[in-house]
Length: 424
Image (cartoon, rainbow, N blue to C red; front, side, top):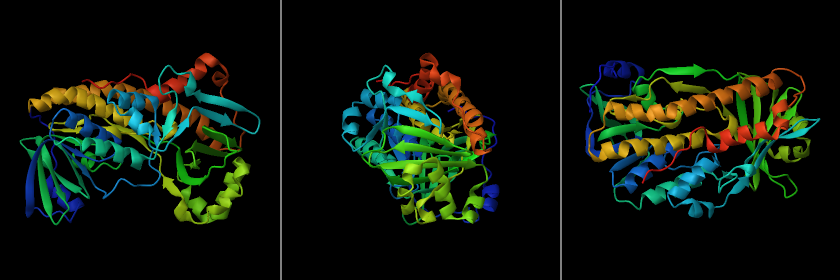
């Protein structure tokens, strides 16, 4: 590994910010691996599977004791289904209970137009697969456990990077009765939008502040309901609806910073506002009888300027926090993982990961990330924000009525900017 003159984590600074960290640790054990992946989400799980399939020793660390978290992204796009097919896993994945979303429509009081029609795409999977993320992660990690070089450790609280001569050599974590140390040729941060490794590695981010937040909740799906995804626009109000088969996952979009005002107005006022946009759900909204059934998401969008340091790479939301627009976060994280495996497998087998190898991962993934984030910003600023910050009536953009241009959002959301394939 080539060292680089770069500011490393200052232990004294960490002691000030995190008083629970003791500079003298009683290490329970020290383990070694080729690749230590922190974060058992889609990016971390897929990367671990891809490396383990090639006989590379990999340890996947997850802070929680299971994968079951509410209101995580449940959309698996055609680009990821094609990756699953390349791994020989698509048929088994589709045996799990799921729903298929073939269109996303926009409905206003005056009109209904198709925003994205996936059924026209040239792919064996012309739809978005709606599958609970917990089931997807369980499926991927169970597949990875077939390989002896894969090791999964749950309930791990990573608190320090091991830095020697300016190179990250692994992590120290608390769990299972004390401090543990994992020494690795490469450490990968795939620990999401609140990434601990991004903080410990002192990565600098370029941030945007999307002018909206989201309230998530679920309602029963009735047999007579339409299928697919839909955006419902009212005067000053917007509800996004995701068809999950037996239930709807709804997103009530609000101006940035408006959550406290909504809480002060009360739950009944919230239900009344949603019913104005989706009147056919008025009776079902009565089941929304407690704020605990509603999840608040502060929408963010950013990316780190440089995804790597010697011995350390960030991927997925740890490297680029995605807006929920288009539901592409999971898919871009998985594409990051595939590119990382393609680029780094040979260096890991040779036990010599150069800084240039890590830079190559960012080079291949940064442009698609910039483009999709620009697309999300356009949708937020030109379509969503004017609705939720005023009482004007939303008028769908003219390009949605043109079949040629109408296919562009579908392609961008479903397949991404640059196709990613698994190298065998």
